[in-house]
Image (cartoon, rainbow, N blue to C red; front, side, top):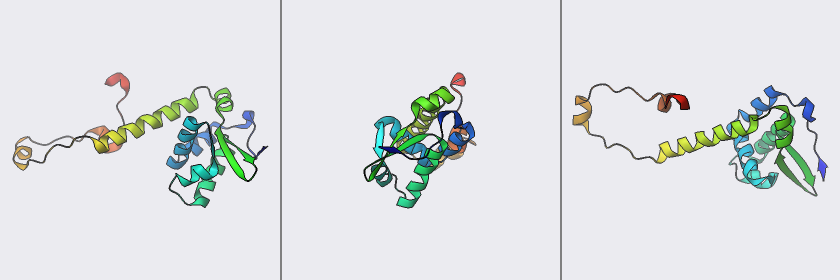
Length: 147
């Protein structure tokens, strides 16, 4: 197997890693690789719901930032996270980002599928003004210490 160009461990920059993982599609790729370990670009690209060239751009961005390693295996390219390299450079960063992304995904899923209050115009007029929940409106979550 032949490695495609990627930065050496000591050349991985925090700003580039954070920039690469700031895109929801690239964050999803990293999360899937965290679960799968290794994945071909073909399989990963098919399940992303983006055009093939867009998926290639995302893979290249992650590789050039030092988040993933891509190897050629015959005609296929196989990706994996650079856990050890990222842990050596920025201890705890990747697990923290992936955990936060997972929690955010679960919170969004439960908000979408949660029970809804029935609309009752008589009660809503009598109950006075309601304040919107900060987390639902802004996407921000209250720190665990305040819950």
